Amino acid sequence: MGEKIKNYFQVDQLHTTVKREMLAGFTTFISMAYILFVNPSVLGASGMDKGAVFTATALASAIGCILMGVLARYPIATAPALGINAFFAYSVCIGMNIPWQTALAGVFVASLIFMLITIFKLREMIINAIPADLKYAISSGIGLFIAFIGLHDGGLIVANKSTVVGLGSFAVATTWLTIFGLLLTAVLMVRRVPGAIFIGMAATAILGLLTNLIKAPAQWVSAAPSIKSTFLVGVRHIGDINTVQLWVVVLTFLLVTFFDTAGTLVGLAQQAGFMKNNKMPRVGKALMSDSTAMLAGSMLGTSPVGAFVESSAGIAVGGRTGLTAVTTGILFILGMFFSPLLTVVTNQVTAPALIIVGVLMAQNMKHVSWEKMEIAVPSFLILIGMPLAYSISDGIALGFITYPITMIAAKRGKEVHPIMYGLFFVFIFFMYILSKG
Image (cartoon, rainbow, N blue to C red; front, side, top):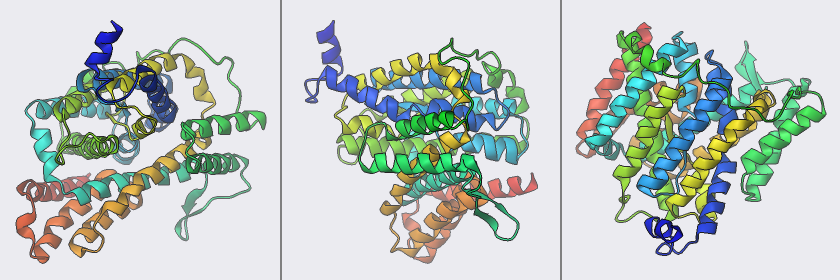
């Protein structure tokens, strides 16, 4: 049995070992385990039950990881993506006043479309049409948006009538928890300690408990919380998707997940040395794995699932096969029994994680061709638009509307893919509809 597993995952051919793959899977898990607590915190802002989201997050992540490992045989883990969950909670539910049940139906519909376009390989075609510079700008812009949310949740940045936003008060004791967590996590990241984000969150929570800034839970381990309040809610509310505005939301879920997952998959494949002739082997199976996980997640009750950049931690310690992802998936299942920690993981505990993940995602800015104004202008509008408009979709719209115009001005209009011209009109329509709402 052991030899069959080794042969299936090509352990020997990729010059690795089962032990190393399992260690890589554990490293990936502790690097991204924070999503079990951050996702309920983010989606909870929309009114969803945090316990149900916790379980849905664990199950959706496990399904995605195991599928990615077994089908695509990549050491890439999946989970509900940061950024798109913020879009779900803050842009759709809070910004547009759309009930979370309807938003979840939007994720379900987007998942079905996602699955169809993956099967017919349209997803690959659309992904290939987006210029690499704009893909990097989108990833970086989401990072800035996530960091901004973290800074606000942690009390470091607050609303200010005179200057719109300003520095928070250091007289607030809980703000110092955020500062402690941020500095500790930053030091651990600089020292390249595996699981730095998770360790930083744990240390911040412990400090909060010791200083009585965080109330201790009655118990530490329990049965997984019920997902009754979220299970199949998206399916039952599919009839709510009956306005142009809501179809815009569905399409935005689709587009944002597109860019986020595509960029992450390609980046991780490059890190692991899988890319051949600028193409990713078995990309169809990888895309099918994450689209299936997204569909499962929408039915369980969470925002879209996608490839996680923290998989780079497992790859960095030698993970090269699907065994890494399978190990991570199994650990997510075990993680379901630690839901009481939700009361310990406050906004001040998760804020440093959001800020540091923002730093990681913002690193993609270095790949943008800033010396070319026709690229720099739309890329910058994407970057600055997301945090300032407090909307991922608005930032993407600003960049995608500007891109064809600047390329034509630079006499490079013929280099613009026809699909990008199509998206130009789609996003003008988006902006019009959203402004009407």
